[in-house]
Length: 218
Image (cartoon, rainbow, N blue to C red; front, side, top):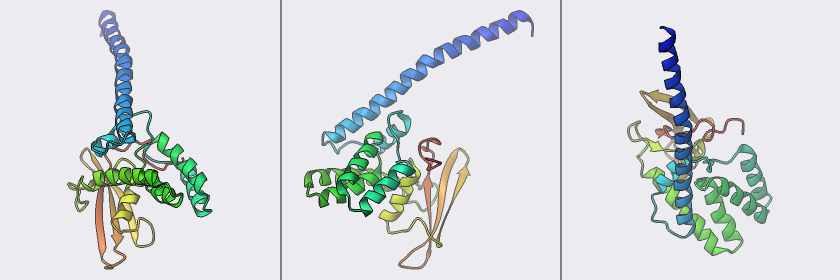
């Protein structure tokens, strides 16, 4: 490759990189705007939105953490165990502000607000919980990779398993990450607590953000 050819390639590379930065910034702003708009609709009482779209918007947005950190969830659990319900609400609302799609924290708020005799907020969080969970259960039946439940974080897997009456930890529970072409799944083997039979369930984890959707060291 002569000097002129090399220079032309460097110039092309420079132009591509220069154009990519503002384009990426514009896409990021659009993703954030979509997420904010959907959250605002739900906060305004509109439960006709597509909750799957809301969850997927969270993954793409820089404004949304789909799961709470270990520290936040630990503090939430301790406050609940100590029956410090006002503190539970404070921590829960902070987590939700950082990630409105946090299914398990909305579910926690249902019971806490009921204990605080705030039926309006209890119902709001119940409706959000129902919308989020239904969007997972409607994505498949979990029996095969092709019909796997679609999730955006590990905590959604745990809550979904609990919702259908299955444990997600213990000696009779195991899980493994598997790949199939461009797709990724978590495969669960669980002994059903009532029938004693082993149940195999699949969760599609294609939407996972490596930095936001796993427990990691948070």
